[in-house]
Image (cartoon, rainbow, N blue to C red; front, side):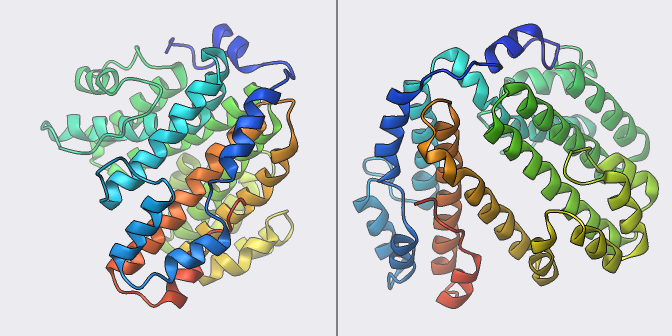
Length: 339
């Protein structure tokens, strides 16, 4: 990736006209028929044993040939999604999906800075599938020279590294990089010129800000911490949310009542897991209308998100079987299906 975060080339690749995607959308519509419906997820949950769950998934085309561990099943399903996107999209069009990959870049940046701070290699801390090679990020952190990275990432890395190396404050290091990741995603979403991708980035940013507000309020975090953590977005006021955070949980709820996220309050009060489920279900409501939009890349992006949502639900069910959780408890955590 070039040093500029959104340089002319990336903008040219992202700002596609309303091209006809009828052929690609037709193939995606066919693939949608293979997604697990709410009824299928219920059937999976009702399997008597973990082994029956695995067989249920294998019978529906999940997993690699000869592989049936949870890790293989879930990883292979993710890989299949991106293989399909590469088959359907040109290199130019694939840039539209970079927005789904930025979080891995910034996760790897946090890992690399901490690895450099500890001065030892830590196994299994990096995530494949980002837009920047892992070794590029590791070398930048090891050298203390982040100039090979995009400008926005470079600035966040320099600030986070400075704080970690001088104070040992890993939490502030994390929030600086997390905030930069949200801003990068939001900026990229708008740059695509695609409403679905822009709305996706906005919802991710809002959800992160709400989570930060709740946790920071309970931990009585300082205003300096909040300023490092909150990321600007369009549908909520960071300044008002920050002020509410300093005044207590009830103030946060009162502010959210004035926004389009008022229906999230009950989930927030219930538990962090319930709020995560609310966010995923809201995303499903957001993307479902895109099934019938054959004039943009939106149905393809919607399929990527739908499959991600499905994989999350399957992971929850498999975890429930392994840990022998009651079906009622598992069902409470399941996401709404796309189909």
